[in-house]
Length: 313
Length: 204
Image (cartoon, rainbow over all chains, first blue to last red; front, side):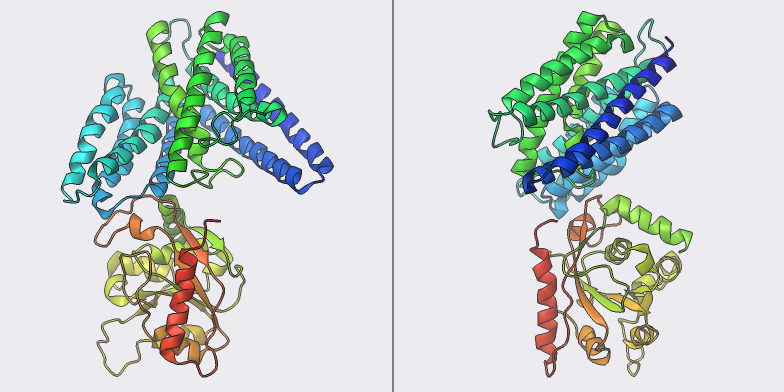
């Protein structure tokens, strides 16, 4: 199969799953009687509808090519950063570092990726951003909780810009025998991460009894985690044909993606609850904000990128 | 609607969201004065962008002539936003500064006003100037809708040029009306209270 045919197959598969999900939602909606099950079904429908929109947007970006995909992820970073900063208490003294994060670091990071500058994009925010953001804040002369305020902006830039940008950076990797196929690798990452979230939700709703971390992420259950995580890993192994990996390698790598995704979900959930919110935002109906959808991606993407880069290029 | 209006409101929505929250009334097409807290230069566009497109055409923001009256700003204010310019400096002491507002209301248009008169830097509005009272007394049939702009004081601090992108909600509250025999100070304080009440409203 050519990379193009493979892409059509996976997109077709996802569309088939979405059609089934929409049908199931419509059927369950007719049978739901109690107030509570109604609310669950309505949320389920909203989530599925949002998936339709997200998959269509992704398909259009993929069809348009690498630049469009980079622009799409740059906007995802922008909206994620906007949500992060909205929930984070800032002071007027943070104005300059915030402007730098939005209007310098973010576009620069994606431009570096667009120009294939691996050596620079991999250290740009962790080195230069890390040092210069707090340095820029010193000129405002506000020392109140300076360390805390610096950490908040640094974390915002790292998660929302640096970590998310690793996903489209997969398009840069030159993998022998896998030329012109990199969009498949990006799709593989997104598919495994999001499938893991969805299946953990489904397994949790069906069999969930034991709460995993009630204070951090009240909807996560041990049963959902194990059921969703294992089934996603198996699907990841079965999808080895769209990757440069063997079946066993795909199994191991998708397991790592799942684990990182779970850790990302838990960590960012702890952060948003520490900031007093239940969702990061309201952009994506049924899901919450951009960061509620990208939390697992932000942790999985850098690790996946470096595994592929180290072992396969 | 002009392309410049779309461009301008689109840009503002990208930067600060301007998500409408109709808490105490709906987006009905009736003659209204929207009055809001004022903390930044984006306030005007944020409220305007939060209104449905069909209401924007006949809802005119009131902007200060000394800031919005020149060059590109004047173009944006009067052409893109269809704003009414008000003379804060009272260059002609005999002229009624409210005259352009009264004219707009007489023609059936709606207004967006900031009764504090100037931008503040706190989440809670300063005491209101008397303009709102005079308009309320003169136009008893026009609905007075309190509006609270959340977060914009963080997005664009006074003196800053570039807004920090931040999700801002525009909350529309329950309309207030001037009661029979109500004195000016009591009415203005009640109207201000209606805006402050929206500040405490939980995110929808």
